[in-house]
Length: 111
Length: 115
Image (cartoon, rainbow over all chains, first blue to last red; front, side, top):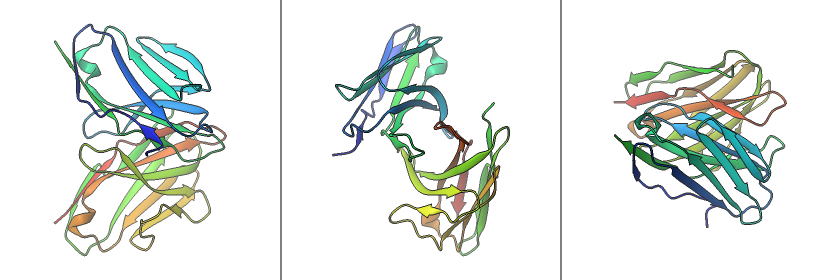
């Protein structure tokens, strides 16, 4: 079993839809959770960074962490074609440990 | 803020030659930098962790004599692919961690093609 599980998709939604992206993990020591967006042939871009459980909102993006269920989510409201990319979840236990990445979910938002 | 650059963005070389890729943190000091490799439609594979002024720590299965990493300053790390072969063709991405913080910021990547 992988430490971090993420459905690779692809996920196709119409413009304006609410998108839900999710990851599950098995290591209860993980405390820091990140979401990255990666466009084709580009490096990943940090979207959201959260510590422990709870919600964090930034514009159209909301990150949720449920440590009791070992489940994290990224919601994208009013999705746009420019949101079409691969979204990677990543996490670690802090203390400058390496990040553990999910497989990435490919999202396509069509006009 | 938190900008990481990589150079070159793409490189084509002949089999048997060596290629150096630079990773720079432009607006922050990075005591730790990471080198990843990514194959098409796959996630990132960590190759090594580079700490300024010390030897890099390589992940299991990564040949340290083939992928030489140097982190000589707080803003620069280099990856040298020695005696490159076609199977080394890939997308190489570095990331940098701001000193005292946990977030990692990625460079734009370098596409290496070995003929």
